[in-house]
Image 1 (cartoon, rainbow, N blue to C red):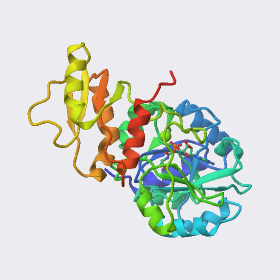
Image 2 (cartoon, protein in one colour; image 1 turned 180 degrees about the vertical axis):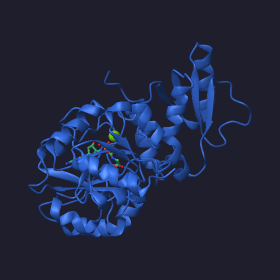
Image 3 (cartoon, rainbow, N blue to C red; image 1 turned 90 degrees about the vertical axis):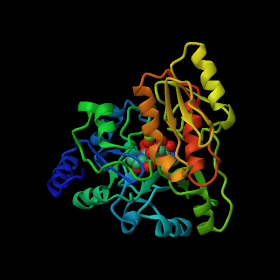
Length: 324
Ligand code: TXA
Ligand code: MG
């Protein structure tokens, strides 16, 4: 199901009135508010239960608007924007005055991206301005990849949900800080490191979860209710069966070819062979295992190349120490 033109107009009107609108992007659903309305931005933090020190991403309808939202556009940023926008890449730049500090968690930099989704682009075009949008989930939990996930997660806290069907990429955007001499990847995501390196013609370091570099990157992000345990792919089945014998309701994210027979567990999800398909379904799988009542999820990390890097990052965080 996809939002109609009158849905888009209604959503743009709500944004102008300082209200919250959830909308689809190619990565995950976002919880949107007028970026220049500090009170509306405050409502986003409230609806998510997110600390106000965690900066938000400003979404724009086209790369041509970038100069209106940042102090200056370095050559690296121009190159990356040209190649990857619209798309799952977020650039961190020095903020222009019009960006309220409420949106940046008090930082002098701002994260900006142009999403690649027809409904998001129609909304941004009808609204005209910038829209701050964190993932439309409660703070710390799994990002939503369908409109239904958003409704379940946020309920009445959001004024309107635009439905654009399931998200095509399924993991959040790659965040690259281009304020320094060298670009640095703050979060792996939908644009792969290999693709960035090909454009920048230099190797890029990607942070591990042990380095919390910016507010809003805590280890316990992206966590389902069930505890997540990561083991080697060939140990997934034995680990799951052992935990089952110990009385756990075990959910398994079963790697391709990890078992030649049926697996004895409460719930088993078979991981697709392609990383793109895995990324697209990852959050849906975690939600499904929660819904089926699992208290423990046994999984393994995919090879950390291409989209596998973002998937591994989210799984590590899901398995990381919990804030609560
Ligand atoms: O794919 C995405 O990026 C999705 C869709 C909705 O666009 N949005 C998203 O937003 O993932 P959120 O709020 O869940 O994550 C944004 C992250 C923050 O947690 C923070 O780590 C980083 O972006 N961020 C934002 N502004 C920043 C800044 N000025 N400096 C460094 N990091 C920043
Ligand atoms: Mg998020």
